[in-house]
Image (tube, rainbow, N blue to C red; front, side, top):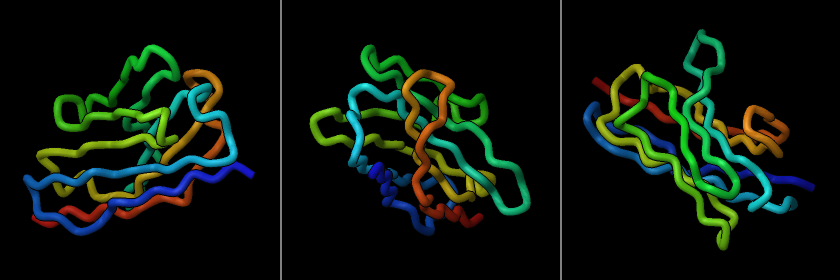
Length: 118
């Protein structure tokens, strides 16, 4: 059974930082591209960042480019999202997503809530 468990969310002031983690089990982690999505209150879910399975190439939404960094540790079956210079508009539930190929979203975590106060 595939499980993706996010952690690290919380309440932070604007300009602050948080580091999200996503621990994966039940899948060959190194074979999956990993992604972060988010959903703000009253809005549709949106792509945040992704990292390839082998080369570690990264991709970001324009809204977070230069502030967020996605990384992975295949030895620990974990993907991270370092979030700096947080803004109130970053407030959302953040989801970890695994896909066999870039652009595939096969498995989703339950989400972790991030609230940025102004």
